[in-house]
Image (cartoon, rainbow, N blue to C red; front, top):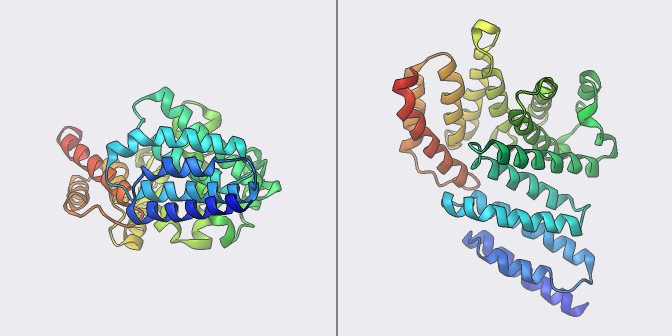
Length: 305
C-alpha cells in the first residue's frame, strides 16, 4: 500500500505538469503509473479521474489543431478502458463526453464516423445521468411534460451534468436528423437549456444561450422560425464572453446572418474573429477552430449571398 501511495503522489505531481505546460505527451507517462498494480482501488479511481480531467484541460488549451486531432482517438481508447475498469467513476464519464464531443468537430465530413462518435458521447452522458441520480435513468424516454417536471427540480449542483447531457443529445440529434423520432426530442433539449439559464446563465460561458441561438435559427422565418429570439441568445453569449468566445460569433454568422441574408453583419462578425488572438484559458482550441471556420465562411460568402 505504501508503494501505491508513493506512486499516486508521483502521478499527482506529473498531472500538475500537464496543466502547467499543457503538454499532452505527459499523458503516456501518467497512464503507465496509474495502471501499475491492481491494489488500492480507491487511490487508482481518484488518480484516473484526475488524469482524465487534466487531459481535457490540456486539450482545451492547445492551439495545435493537428496534434489534438491526431491524439484524441488514442486518449479516448484509454478513457474507454478506464471506464471498463471503473464503470461507476463519474469523472471518467465527464471526460469521455467532453472528448468525444471534441473529436466530433473534426470528423463531421465522415457521416458514419461522426454518427458513431456523437452516439458514444450521448451514451456516456446518459450513463452519467443515471449514476448521478437514479430517477434520471429514464429521463430521455419521459414524455415532454414529465421531462419538464424532472429538470425543473435541478439546482446549481446539477447544472454541469445536465449541460453535458443536453449538448451531447443535441449532437446525437444532428447525426440522426433524418429520423423524426430523434427530431421530436428537440423541444426537450430547448427545455434543458432554458432551465440551465434559469439556474446559472453564465455556465460554460453562456453555452446554453449559444445552443438556443442555433436551435432557434434552424427554421427560416417564412416557415415560422423566430430569428429575433435567436439573435437575443447570440448577442447575450457574445456579451457574457466580451467577444472572447470566438465560436459564438462564428455560429452567430453561420446560423443567424445567413438565414436572414445579412451580409454586412456576417462579414463584420467573421472579420473580427480573424483579427483577434485565439489564446484564451479554456477556449484556445475552440477559438483556433473558430478562426479556421470563419475563414471558410468568408471565402464562401460571395457565392452564398
